[in-house]
Length: 635
Image (cartoon, rainbow, N blue to C red; front, side, top):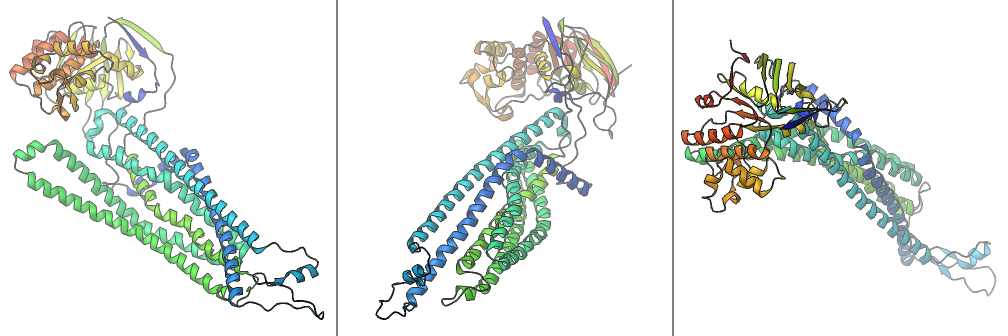
């Protein structure tokens, strides 16, 4: 069998060979160094915000267009309302007509809405004024145009914001999955799979609101009110001062509410993680719970955990409503002050005060809502920013990202079969527990079998996991056909190896789909041949749909021996030159063990095999035996 080992350091998938660091507990559930964790979370958010700058730019720009259109709407609406009020006042109190001193001259027709006669306009040497309804239609047309522009800008802003959130989610989820895959199964030693699933799914989903809504709203809350203040300053400087003072109170109130919201959110996240982990564990052990008669007790415990989550969620909502109440109070205060200030101007018989016309006064009053609209939008998504900081603290607790690739020349190593060598390998996964492998050295020629024997904890499974790329030694070398394992492209390493463990992972689906998982492009004939070689057909033919029979998650509906035979069928289908067997007959009855061993002996023909087992059945395999103790070769 001709094998080409492609060695290239710094491949895009080099992360699978990264060392497995100790996994720290989630900051949401740990009190160690809270200040440092918060600082790291803020730094991480700043870096991600800079990376997402291009995608969040368009929601901000379209949002500013909507703010400007809203300001124009307010000014035009004020002018329209002022004309309407003037016309109403003139209708209720018509002014006397202006008469000329010439004897016998008829009185000029009065224009009540304007308070001036056409004759007087001509006598002053000015062109005749346009009809009042013409100016009114111009104002109404401008108002409708501004409304359409605002609606289009808001629609575009929503679309751009959704795209920004989706882009951020894809990037963050890909990065988190790459980091988990780089760490390998060792990451489960420090965190529950349910907690990791919550981080990858729920926490990243919460960050969608941060990138899609919070970041644009935060910028618009600074720039939007400033734009409205400029318009108000042009209409009435006093109104601009009132709006500025009222707007300055909002950040202080939101900051005060945010202190309590941050703590409440962290407690809510901790309660949610506990509920998710507990629910997942109980679903996996449902049969054990029922047999032990603990169904009612566990249901009550889940109900208690759900009630705790509900209470903590309501506390977060109460704090959120507090920040909204502060904003409403500031807006109401500004509106009342300005309404009192313009009371004389807007009275039926009033006149402009200090140079402020009724149209300007009404425009300023309508601008109050526009001034606080960006601040209100920020208040409505303020929780997204708090959620993002809490989610960031959990994301940075994941294993570190793989190192940046370093380009090397690609080389092919042609050989017949695969030879494996460990050269003075030292590996420590947890400094508190000491070295797992200590100065371990051995070599397996291509096509031969090595049986690793020794007590539990001697390092047998660690050797298998190291060859799978889940661990990287701190010192020493692991080579395949002389090529360093850290230089082998993970995709090539995957093609070279087949693995059968003591607890095969089966997915919900058909038996054929679970076998084809090893090589998705395999044909039906190849899947059937692999099932026959692994004795899967012996029990599948008795099932209603044969290999098309559906099984539950984790192999529910199959015995341990049947599940193990499906795992062996995967190895047959993969047809890899390096076969790694990690306690393949553990937990099997003698009959099932005999069938599994028969399949494995036929699978091992012509391949390099490393078998880790402390079972007596391992001695049925021919080949060299290597006794391990405390991570080193026993004397």
